[in-house]
Image (tube, rainbow over all chains, first blue to last red; front, top):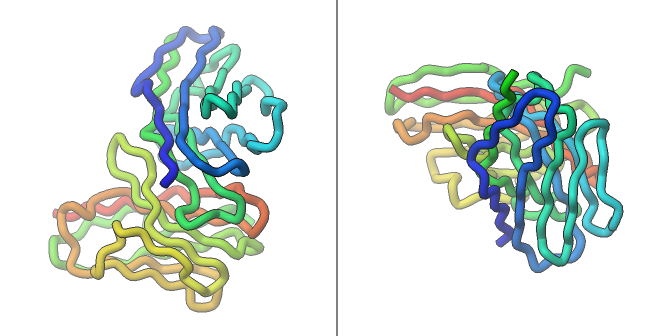
Amino acid sequence: AQTVTQSQPEMSVQEAETVTLSCTYDTSESDYYLFWYKQPPSRQMILVIRQEAYKQQNATENRFSVNFQKAAKSFSLKISDSQLGDAAMYFCAYILPGGGADGLTFGKGTHLIIQP
Amino acid sequence: DTGVSQDPRHKITKRGQNVTFRCDPISEHNRLYWYRQTLGQGPEFLTYFQNEAQLEKSRLLSDRFSAERPKGSFSTLEIQRTEQGDSAMYLCASDYSGANVLTFGAGSRLTVL
């Protein structure tokens, strides 16, 4: 079974600074997708960024970018120019093409605090 | 289309009662997932439908849990004889085959007294 590990239960960053959230995963598959989801206090899970494992180029969405290291099974999220609205739980997740038997497998999350 | 809708948003019940949650996915999405999330944890997979067929069920889904998606559109998740350990947020998500991007609803929070 696939597992996703987020080793940072909580991270804190000053507004306008850059922060990196870590994620590692374990799989024997070569084709899969990785995601970062954001869950603000309202609890709605929102997609932040997606990475296809077959693409070497790291995904970027505005202030959010990833560092995908396939051999190391590492998938970190970098948030540049942090804003107060970025405060939330961030979940790293994995899915096989076609959804797989378990859909998304999530890590336990990282609570991101933005200090004004 | 306003996204994935879940109802009710919050349900408080007494132990032993039955509860039912409803999920309306995005209309063109043929796959629908149920997850359970307890405080401080990531969501855990419960079950998955493709159209009206329930293709996978987690070991977390005990005999007291049942899910349906009768016409391949909305889905219901019923919990019979609720226990305090069932208290959690129940999340629904949907996508369409080949997209591999799940869209989540706001969740239904269950509190069992």
